[in-house]
Length: 288
Image 1 (cartoon, rainbow, N blue to C red):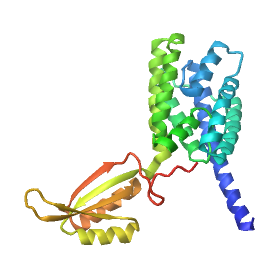
Image 2 (cartoon, rainbow, N blue to C red):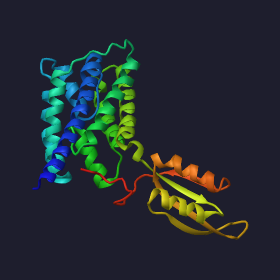
Image 3 (cartoon, helix red, strand yellow):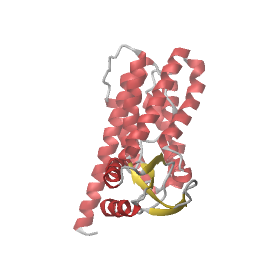
Image 4 (cartoon, rainbow, N blue to C red):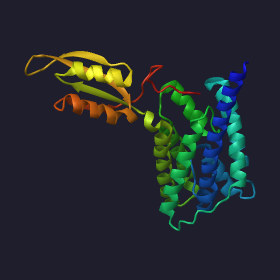
């Protein structure tokens, strides 16, 4: 391995350790600062660990969490990849240390605010962790597996798995606590999707314009990405129409609108969401 390769590898490892550490700190702050003091259940493996910790408070939560992670890491090794497995081992170690040492109270004095803040901290932490090549264990592993194999969004998997654990915990908690926990889990899932996808989320843009040639030239020049021309026909006029079809990132959407206004303010434009995009240059390619 050359000196440059060593430097590149070192930077990659350092970046991933930073992501794992920052995300684990935020997650630990949510657990020890809000969830445990309020006896909120959580979801997934964290939820199971917390439920057992509430029943047996003399045993630390992190021990239950580590115990449940053994079969999940076997799944990670077999179905996701060795790099993900090794980084997730590192992430699990960092997360365990953060949960053990970070005990910062968050005095909000309102359980709804507690639920919202816990969801924000936890979702942000998990999103940052999953921007690395690994995870902190738990349901993260199942979320990554389902994303890679079935294109199911991370937050959706997390929310579904979390609700299952909350249903199981209903017999051990009051209805009020369960409602607060559902609020926490919903916010957690939404924030996770925003943090993980960020400004790279893809949009579909359809443009019908008489000045399609000028629009096409400007977009190809400025964005240097694929643009498809679809041949259509006006239902009323029966005139041939050219429809420009493009998949762009959220960060590019504002500039695309500016170009359209400059070239043809009368253009008909439709912007829609994408469920998933597969392409090495513009697709939402999993990095694990």
